[in-house]
Image 1 (cartoon, helix red, strand yellow):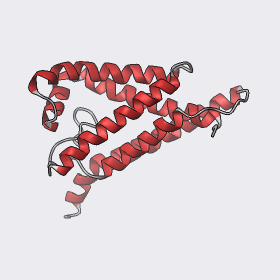
Image 2 (image 1 turned 180 degrees about the horizontal axis):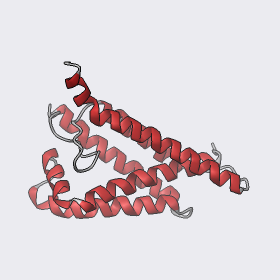
Image 3 (image 1 turned 60 degrees about the vertical axis):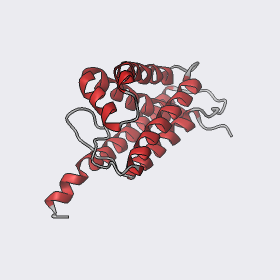
Amino acid sequence: MPLDPILIHACALALAAILATAATHKLRAPRWFVAQLEAYALLPQGLLKPVARLLPLLEGAVALGLLLPLSRSAAALAASALMLLYAGAIAVNLWRGRRDIDCGCAGPGESQPLRPVLLLRNSVLLGLALLATATPLARELGLFDGFVAIAAAAVLLLLYAAVDGLLTNAPRLLKLTGR
């Protein structure tokens, strides 16, 4: 079913910003990211550094691809695969009972322990990626449509930042309230 192009553009823009930010965190703190990968205990030691170098480049390429109309669908599918990969890594460690490790989601300097709610967050991001793969309705887009798409993406990003901030600070808030 074709969707309004504004929705598709907004989802693609928001997801591109999230992936570009994630790539930037990893590229700015490569040692931190290698330590994050090691904490998940899913890769052999010899693959940690190569994956730590490749993954942020892949995230950046997918983010760029989401911005370009010709590559949007393929990039959105790649973003879907990344969200599934990240959710899988979280799920495996939750299943192992390893809730004490930092998910690495908030970047260096912000610790966020693994919790099942992160799987829900990744499901929402997966939904955004899948919406970005949809076939748009054939209609002309005007200047106002571009503004609406950017504003909708900004709202999605603000919601994401608010939820991410709550998830990051929830353990601290629980400690403050004595729970």
